[in-house]
Image (cartoon, rainbow, N blue to C red; front, top):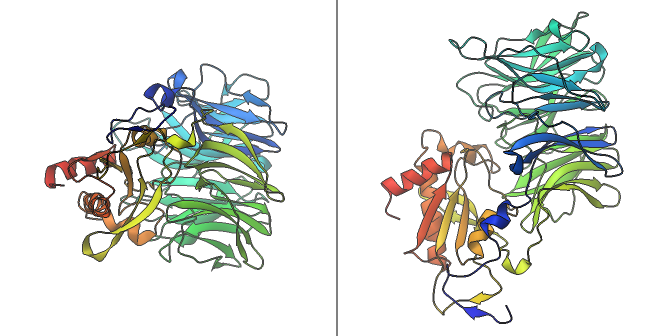
Length: 507
């Protein structure tokens, strides 16, 4: 348009249409690094959501690895994740169409390595010293009982020799063999806990036959959430724990647990799915880690000798769902309010960022993009709640004087998810038409510490509704919303909050 028009909020025309939102978009998931090659899980909406494994070589050549007829996905713990691994060019993956594990040699076709029965597999890795896969198996072969979780080994030269090597708990994740092949670490937990409530981190010693001969509890329990165990290149076990009220980094050295850099920040995500990694080792002396403060994810280096902590300068506000550090560079997923989510390679020496794959190639004029404001506001019982406010933004319009915009209050699912400041065209669809949007990190959300995450305990349907209602009232009092045009929406756990707000409140 050549001139700005005057039109009421909610009546603006926008180039961000529903067709535009779905056109050419893909979803980017689990990332793995094998030598100089980067692999990732890529969801294809135009293929009914089928997920494939993709590879980018050091020369940025893209290749689709898994062929038509295969859907790389696992349903272990129902939410899945950790659906593939790569070792020296060979890809091992779970196929959602039949639930079986497959091995795909470079240039070859996938070959099944698990039996055609109702077993599910996730979070598997190659144990090179014993030529086998180790991962989590969920047994659904007896429909009269609850599924049984174990950690299993699958000999690659004879997959029929599959055997459980760790059993007895209700749930398992993250079985990882030490660099020298002598030990294994894993997470376990039991009903009624979810993994963000309480987990246990164990170390086991391998016997000569590959079984786990002895077990030692490292950290965790019913009230301590431990996550992301990771062996350093020199064989020290690192992990994340919320024992101080925040998910911070620790290590087990000389049979003692040491904190690395205590701070009021979160260094991991809730374990909804397998395979997430928010930190890694550039080498034995240097950790590259992601952490979140006030809804913004950041990147830092941590010296394992001096424990010096050095944040990196970055324009990204979301990163580190899947982070892999290697000498001189890091591979991770990133996003910001103005850029589509992407998988990138960051050079740690020069700061150069190379995009390996973007979730969308759409370029949208910044004049139609609302950049969110992180807000904090008072809620019930003298507490503070958090959210991201997107004001109406469209370069082609102005509004009549004194008019206030309608407001859409958006509630994420989980309820232990976290809303972050990334480009969301489903939000910009509304803001570019003259609606304000408040994306609420209500009590129960992650990213704001353990106490905040536990606010919903015994109060689900109350605390979350309070925080949404008070967020809307705060923006009305500030002059950013019309009190007669307040809208609330959400899906999954957010749908539960929406229904409670409509049923029990007058706002």
